[in-house]
View 1: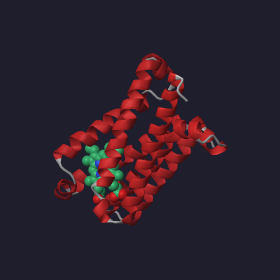
View 2: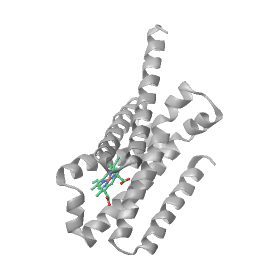
View 3: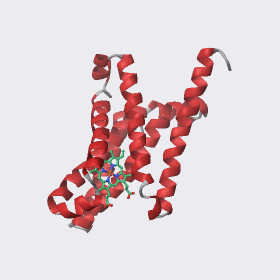
View 4: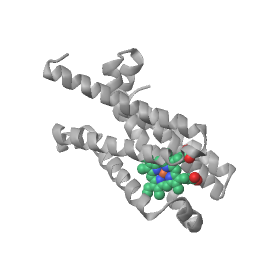
Length: 197
Ligand code: HEM
């Protein structure tokens, strides 16, 4: 499975997952399940897209080459997953605003909202035409800065939940691992460029 078909399939699975949760719990609990589940699917999809080029460089194999080839489609699938996270959050503001404000605060909305601006800009420039319109240098800058901003957003969102149990520690290991993989690949590339390796 490759390309836009991969994005289409993953999007259907994500939508079906959200609908099943809401059908089983047609209340606030269902919305919270969707918010938490999509945060987790988003993390996995983001980790796959964010680490794709670095893993293909550091550990070439059929799997990492598949990941690298499908980086764009995994990235757009991450955006779909996080759009569902946002839709469920908006629904929560309507159904139980008091609970919503006990779970979050204005500062978090500004910081996490900025991540959504990056996700929107990166998704909009994930098509051949829009990427060509932006130009390769600006595209690389947007996707580099945006990628690391989203990485920090995950580190913060997971980090503050570490006291809640081992699942959050496992999620944190994934966040840190993809960050380290990216930094190692970046340092190898700059050593090669400087001719010191
Ligand atoms: C305006 C933007 C956002 C708001 C208001 C928001 C709000 C929330 C809330 C209220 C929860 C807890 C749900 C519950 O306990 O029932 C949550 C969970 C989470 N969010 Fe978001 N979020 C936003 C954007 C983001 C972004 C941009 C990221 C990461 C890039 C993110 C990652 C997470 C993670 C990792 C969890 C934990 C899920 C779990 O418990 O496993 N969120 N968010």
